[in-house]
Amino acid sequence: MKFRAPLVGARRVDLGLGAGPSGRIRPKSRPFRVRQNSSSGRALDLARKHQRMIFGEKHDFAIEAMVEVNLVLPSSVWGRMRVWCAGIPLGDFSEPHCGLPYSPFKSLCLDLPGLWDPEFEGKSDEELFNHLDAVLYGFKDGVEVADERTLEECEDDARAYSRFSFLTNWGEMFDREGKSFIFCVDGDSVNVLNRPIGSTQLRCLRTSAVSVQAACSEFMIWFEQELTKLRPPSALRN
Image (cartoon, rainbow, N blue to C red; front, side, top):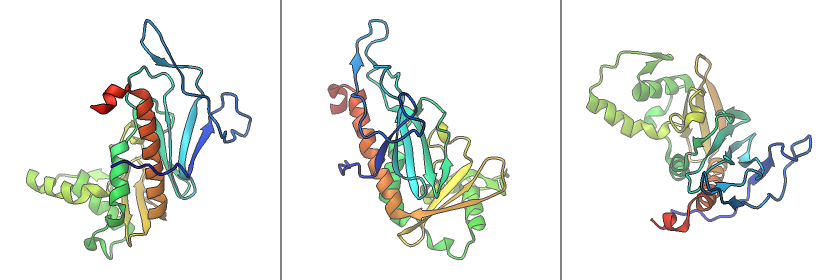
């Protein structure tokens, strides 16, 4: 499935090379140039500006991402990322050369309106988080416990509940963010439950399905554009 809507909410943000003290948004970027290098093959021009893209609004929901500038062509889309929800950053943007998770965001965009289960009705945020932490990861109250389920039962639970997992195992940039789960209770309101590593505090971050889907769609368009730049036409046809 291809997403070809315009990048309405995306913004390029200069990270400091030539930017003013405010780090203001620049409407135009330097063209993407390629040079020949006999020792390392084709490489991205190192003079290209360090830029990050922000899809959405940080106070609501946004995906912040950039592609590394020193990639040798052809290449996968290696870069940096974090997600913003209700003004809270999730992810380490300083972690370099991470695989940017296209497929998880595509699945989230498509499946989001149905991310709820009637069995969750009446559960508090804490009870809901603990339930999913137990059936998916074998943890209770943040501590790993003995799991008496059979392998088949674990696989059944994974099929039933893994769709609610958010950012966990999506990439190295999210490895230190603890665990997160995402729900869409009424097809419109979205809740993200996050418990940071080493903390007993549970954060409930609220946004909307419209905001999440818009940010995901815009990120996917940009990702496909970057992939086209990083791979020769013959590779894209395969």
